[in-house]
Structures are given as C-alpha cells and as structure tokens.
Length: 462
Length: 96
Image 1 (cartoon, rainbow over the protein chains, first blue to last red):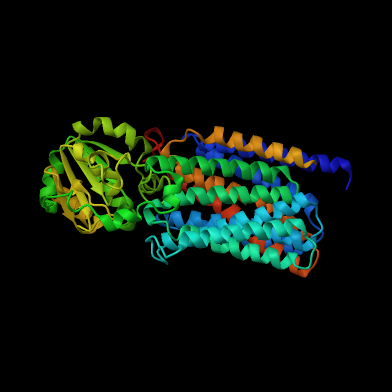
Image 2 (image 1 turned 90 degrees about the vertical axis):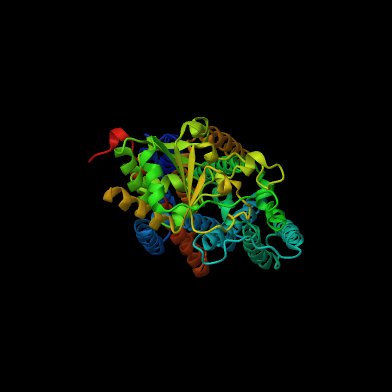
C-alpha cells in the first residue's frame, strides 16, 4: 500500500468524523433531525468503505458478516412496533457494546505483545463493552417484561458490587503489568466475566420508572467502549465518534436525572426503596370519585381547552391512536387541545413523543412541562392517561413524600381532572397520589384504550 | 500516531459532544439516543479488521461475530431512527 492511498483513507475517516458531528448537531433540531440522521449514516458508510481499503486479508468472512448483520438489522428495524422502541434501543446498544468487547478480545488474541497502552485500552474496551452489553440485556428484559420490572435487591448487593469492581481493578492491573505471561489470557477472560456480572448487578436494582436514566447511561457506555476500541486499533474516527456518543449519553442522563430531581447515584443505587416500605397512607386521605364514560363525555363536550397528559400506561394499553382520535374530535368540537409531556414519562427519554407521533399527533401540539404548567389554571379539563408519578402533586405539597421536589405537571390545577386508570393501585414507585382524591378529580377506571374508545363512540352517537 | 495525540483528540471530542447536545427539545430525545447509538456502532471499523485479518481461525470467528453485531447496531440503529423521525410532523407538513 502506497502512502498516497493511506492519505486517502485518512481523509475518509476525517470526512466521516465531520459528518457525525454535523449529523448530531442536526439531530437536535426538529426540522432537520431526519436529514441529520442521514448525514451521520453517510459518515458511517464512508468510514466503512475507508476501512475496507485497509482492513482485510480475506474478504469472505467480512462480506458474510456484513450481509448477515445488515439483514438482521433491516428486518428488526422494519418489524419493531413503536411501543417496543425502548427495548429495541436497549438491545441495539447491547450489541454495540458486545462488538467492542469482542474487538478488544480479538486484538489481544491476535497480538498479545502490543504496547502497554494498547493493552490498557483492551482492558477498558472489554470492561466498558461488557458492562454496556449485559446491562443492556437486563434493561431489554425489564422493558420487554421478560423479567420483572421491579427493582431487585438482595442482601450484601453493594458489597458484592464493590468486590467485583476491586477484582476487576486487580485483574486489570496484573494483566497490563505482564500481558504476555501464561496467566494473562485467563485474566482477560476473568475480566470479561466480571464485567458481564457487573452490568447485570448494576441494572437489576433499577426500577422500570428509572429506565430512561439507565438507557441513556448505557448508551453513553457503548460510545466510550467504541472509543476504547479506537485506542486499540489507533484509529481517530472511533475515538471521535465514541467520545461524541459518550458525551451526549451523559448529557441525556443528566437531563433525565434533573427531571426527577434525583442524583445519578440515587437512581443507580435505588433511592426509592425505603419509600416503598414507608408508604404515605396517613398523608393521603379521602375517597376517589369515579366517573362513567357518559358523564366524562359531558364534561369533555363542554370543555374549551383540554390537556392530555400521557404516561407509561398509554404505552401499555397501546392507546396512542385512541388518544389522537378523541383529541381530533375535541378540536372539531371547538376545544383547544394540547398534549403535555413530562421528560421522564414512559420508559425511555422522549418515549411519549414517539408514540404520539406514531398516531400522527402534530408536534406543535406537544408541550413540555415548563410550557404547560403556567397555563394549567386556565385549562378546563386535564385528561391523565396512564400517568401517575409525573402528575403527583405530593411532589409539591408533601415534604415527606419520596418524590418531593421532583418537577411535575400540575394536572391538579386544571378546573377538572379526569384520570384514566386501571385500578386504585399505587404507581410504580409505590407512592400514593393525592391527585386521585382531590375534589376536582374524577377517576375513569378501566383499560385506557377501551375507555377512550367508549368516549369516542359517545361523541359519535351525540 | 502518538498516544498523547489520540488522548488529545478524545478529550476535545468529549467537549465537542457536550457542546453539541446541551439543548435538545425533549421530543427528540429518543431519536437522538437511537441516532447516537447507531454512531457508537463505529466499532464496526475495528470489527472489519478483526474479521478480515485475524491471526488464526479463533480470532476470525470472534471478529466475525463482532462484525455481525456491530452491523446490526449500525443498520438497525439508523433505520429505526429514520422511521421514528419520519413520523414527526408539523402542521405545515401535514398532507391530507
């Protein structure tokens, strides 16, 4: 290979890095987000083509790998339902992490006599990649409800985690110290196994409602793992792209934590567990007043302004299309319809926005919490669909509440609140919700989708 | 390439990433996450070398698995992001 082609390959990597940066920038703006994604995809294509010019002695496995991976990717992306998007993102993220782990492993297997810095990068790649992979698989299991979404705690959990981290440090140090010793290969395998355990143990104590934070954080890890892989093969495009993803994942994690008024440490180490046992029964008194679909129809029929507040319950009931239908009917009826989205509603950042967009709700009707709260008092009816903690006034009013201080949508300040809910069970966090017993609140019990469809037929009959 | 230079690039890229993402409307959080997730599939470049230039059969197998996974991450990630972003519509874009 001449120097000239090496320059061209490098130029390809530089171009790819630029396209990633421009793409991410555009992804942050609603009008240009879709082009931004395509720009970044073009960057990826250029990086792959550039790599093909320098990577390979034999192409048979390379072609097979790319074809198989692309087919699986295409089929998965085409067939996944929008309601399953959180677990899809989680599992894709896991694959990226595992790929970085394997790249690290392969590099050590093929050239265990690399310099110390590369060996250190191999440890980082298998460690971060391993945690990202097994953590994402557990997150996938929780989101897809293959395993319980409840936080899982056991005795000595923190001690075991600390012991694993210490063991990884020791193994890592020994491995980097003498990477060619007979014991080095088993040490690397041990690090991989420990990293996988750490990912599992790190995610099982995290409850479903905290999933947006975890997914954002795991996303960050898989970026950093790719960066570490870049240090192994000494390639700047991996380092730059991985660092960009790592940083953006951390920023998103921060946004999610802020939306819950909790620190990252509090989310990761299960701050709400004590609250579940404590409960707040003495704080919340009164009986919820149920409402029939017929009466709810009369309330909505007379409303001039309506705000819908969706939550995870809407995703579970797959009620987004029914929400859109009733929203359209209300608009035709002359009401002003808004959708208020809490940053952590659902199971991943922006979950509700995606579902409502799927149902063709226009995004200028979607309002962020800070925009909708100031006008809440002038709203005739606030319809809460399968949301609980994000509209809990205890966050403002009851200092002993475990979610006290969390910014919430002030649904209770609307003139009338209609809450669509399956039953009176407490929300995911196990925190009582005084909203349900406020004098201006009416409970419409039942499956959210069925209730909304009943309302639609009430309007149609009228 | 010197190690110092690689670390230099890494640190600058972290700062750049932070600057790029600070203000994103919440409706774009999911596409941003899955879009950046697809970018983290850049490890595919490492996987290509691993699959195509492994020292022995075992290395080639490990590399090929890495390549398959990274390709799923890249292709699936971009397509899924595109599918989500195609759904976001504004009033002036609505066609009926």
